Figure 1 (cartoon, one colour):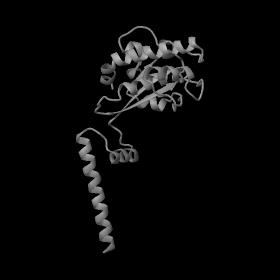
Figure 2 (cartoon, helix red, strand yellow):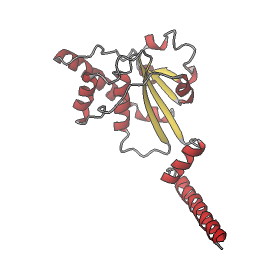
Figure 3 (cartoon, one colour):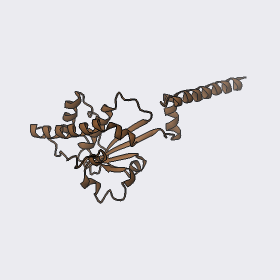
Figure 4 (tube, helix red, strand yellow):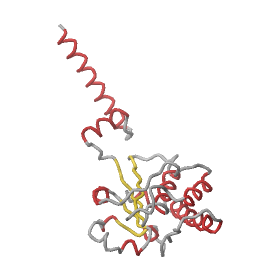
Length: 205
């Protein structure tokens, strides 16, 4: 009798999970249960990965990530978007630069980079990515990246959006007004390009 009750409970749970999965799959929105199952069985076919790549990992790429996520905050997507900021390394610091945090806070009146931790580029994540945007031509041609950048999905940031030039590195960090202004100018340029080219960005994923 006990075995039959347990079997019935298990069958009900499995049926509920399947119905939940199908319900959310039709809406193209992953449910909590679907997400857990996806992680357990590494089923993540509906996830798209966007990587911003810069030199030290503390300035341009975290700002680009924060800006992208903020600009997409109220936009309905039919896929899960994972945005990553990565630095070629060695990483300049284990924290985002003070001026980068200040620039993003000025643009959005929020501390969007307060808990951000810089990450060094990995071939594994580059291979998984759907789109990789490199901040400048010099970095794109760096010898350490030649064997790991998947060329079919890697572009210089500005060129991807149909523009010329680079997103210049505002480094070094500082708290003086000149440095803060330089970083804010960099962040504002990135935001302007992403806002204008948001449809192009999403269309490439």
